[in-house]
Image (cartoon, rainbow, N blue to C red; front, side, top):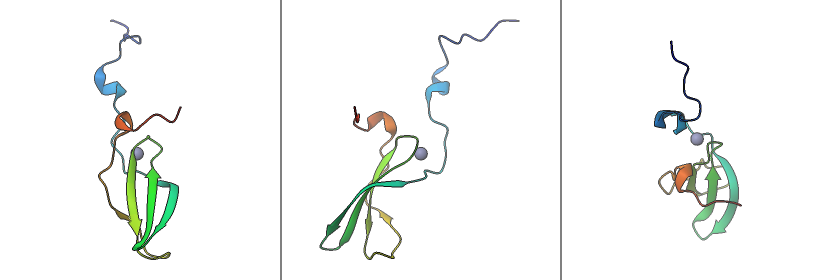
Length: 74
Ligand SMILES: [Zn+2]
């Protein structure tokens, strides 16, 4: 029996597990048509949402940008 090679994991081990993103708001900005929200998931994915009214549900205004394409915050 061979031991798994921990120093060379398969590519599949490096990909995030598919999941339903749990968005949190990074920032919110008032615009003429309502609000624009910049949201981020714990996995690092980002998206831009819009909201027409304070109590309206947010609507995706952009595609989800995977974490590997998101700009670094450091
Ligand atoms: Zn996510």
